[in-house]
Image (cartoon, rainbow, N blue to C red; front, side, top):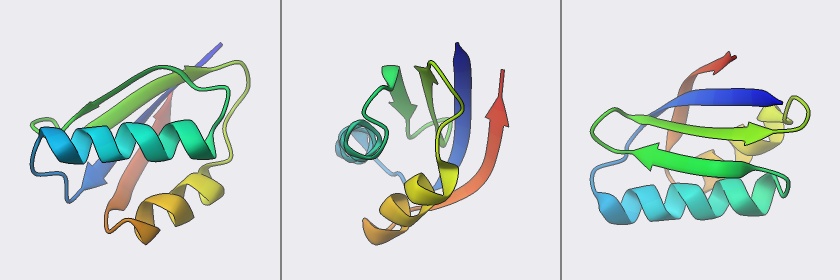
Length: 73
């Protein structure tokens, strides 16, 4: 299992968190335990293998947010 933590710029409210969770679900279909926080400017999720971050970056850019950093645990 790979835990991915992404720092995101642009989330301002709970609705932003919901949009982020939706785009992660659509882009990374095997993502589980998806949580986003506008207060911490981050989203995290778990996958079986390392996710395609370039694909996720593109999807997040398209909805108006920006990935600042990515960390794996």
